[in-house]
Amino acid sequence: MAEINERKLTLDIKLVFYGPALSGKTTNLICLHDLLCPQLKSEMMILETKNDRTLFFDLLPLGLRTATGLLIKVKLYTVPGQVAHDSTRKAVLSRADGVIFVADSQISQRHNNSVSFENLMENMAKVGLSPEKLPIVVQFNKRDLTDIISEEEVVRLWEPTPWEVIFASALRRWGVVETFKLLLSLVYDSLDPVFLLNLRHQLPKSDFEAGLIGNFTSPG
Amino acid sequence: MSNAKENLSTEVFDSILDVPELLQVIDKNKLGNILDDLLNQQYQLRDNHGVLVCGASELIDYLPVSIEHDFEEILQLRLAKSQEKKRNIAHQLLEVLVNNAIRYTMTSRLHIQAIKDDYQQLAAEHRALEISKAKYKALSEQLEERVQEQVLEIQNTQLKLYKSEKMSAIGQLAAGMAHEINNPIGFIRSNLVLFRDYTEQLPMLKAAMDTGDTQKVRQSWEEGQLDYALEDFPELIAESLEGTARIADIVSSLKDFSNIDHNADVEADINTIVTTTCAVASNIVDTGISIVTDLQELPEINCRPGLIGQAFLSLLVNAADAVDRKNGRIRIETEFQDRAIRIRVIDNGIGILTENLNRVTEPFFTTKDVGKGVGLGLSICQDIVVAHNGSIDITSQPGQGTSVQISLPAG
Ligand SMILES: Nc1nc2c(ncn2[C@@H]2O[C@H](COP(=O)(O)OP(=O)(O)OP(=O)(O)O)[C@@H](O)[C@H]2O)c(=O)[nH]1
Ligand SMILES: [Mg+2]
Image (cartoon, rainbow over all chains, first blue to last red; front, side):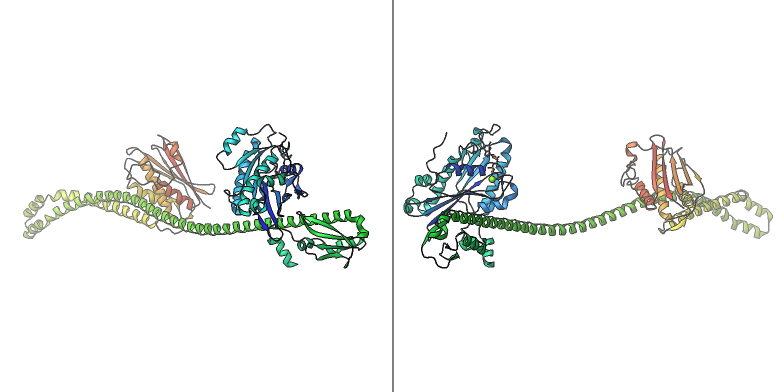
């Protein structure tokens, strides 16, 4: 849960990329690392991996300083998608302020997607996050492939849920920043009433997004 | 230090890192040595609280180089002007060090957190398992008890049925006996009535004799038809004696049969048991049925004669029920071969249908009319034979007859 450190004047925001193994969470993060031009950006931390599978987490820290001097740190984490690393996944998820659920569009991965989403809901419950309150964006990744579930089908399936769906190809670098931007917007809406970002820190949503994304223009 | 280590494990893995905690994973002495070498001891390294980590105790004119983590300074390197050229390399070195320390700390915290969580989950599962194990154990104990109770109950009802089956055999036997005994009793009685009639003439004859008048004596003799009496007496007496002998026979075979009901293991001759049982059975089977025996010499075997007799009797009763009442034939053979005694009961009765053949030894399987037995006969027979380590073989041809062979180990 985000909180302001009054002494140091910092606000930590934690955003987590969740999803089944090999759905492209790490690829999403690398893509953001390459495409974003935030006010403050530090080195991406890709932790121990085994055959390119995340074992612990990846971390991309972004930062932004408001006119009032508040340092907002946004930390983007990926969880390990492999079923076996559930405790690690839960620990990384804990105290998240927003989640991007990266689903794998391939037809063969339908089952894994739903298992992972259920796992997200379970772990959220375990670490005390409510699905009504936590901002979640669903990304259907790997749209560049051919053997994939159709957009109509995805929309039909997710229409009844409260979550918005974005189509992307992290490999081709499209849809990723859009997903991120949508989440930032939701997160701003959920944090502003608590921390009075606009009122107290003179940070309207547009500045919040611009400060973290930079002048990015969608290639499409 | 131990306190710090504890913090390391209890804190959330991505909680804000403090410099002292970070420095814990960096060997300060080695760092000092390297920096001393690199910067000719003309530097100071201070943490974000201003505390000196290593370097010169005093430094007057210096250039501050900030090492950041999370967009905030966590270490400050103060370089003497003379070392200004090494600013970049020193900065890079410290950045790599700090980054590695952070990586290490976060990973190990996360790792410990995950392991702890796994452990707790395991412990919870273990507890749940223990609880269900205890439940199952209690349940299985209960089950065992219940099974035992039911087995006992089944044994009891079976015993009752066995007894009732035996009673029905004995009942049949008794009915047959009654008939057989009634017969001689009937003619002995009518003979005795005749005797009584004749003897009632005797007082008249004595009175005539007392007069001394031969004429009167002759007259009285003739009136009493004592000539006939004289003629009939030997036959009546012989017949009556034969009748009592028959009754004695029946009673003695019955006694033998009840004698062999003592269920103790004794050395016994199977032929004797067969003969006794046949004697009993001959009284109850219809007279139209012929029972032929062909008994070869057998060694005595250790057995329970009462049970063997019962088994054999039920085979006989079955055979008698299967054959024609007027000209049925039952043949009984015994032989000793290959260290086994074989008792065969062969009949020319209705036979057993193939589909029923392997069911006939099942308890309660019967094709007989209701009232003729509950179907335990062959089943009991089988139990008895098996209890003697023997076996039963049944061959049958529907319409031709059945042969039942009991094999008992001997010698
Ligand atoms: N075709 C295609 N492949 C992709 C896309 N995104 C990721 N991949 C590939 O999918 C594989 C797995 O990607 P990662 O980003 O490592 O997956 P992950 O979700 O981090 O996997 P874990 O760390 O095991 O949970 C890699 O070979 C990527 O190149 C995409 O949009 N299209
Ligand atoms: Mg990964």
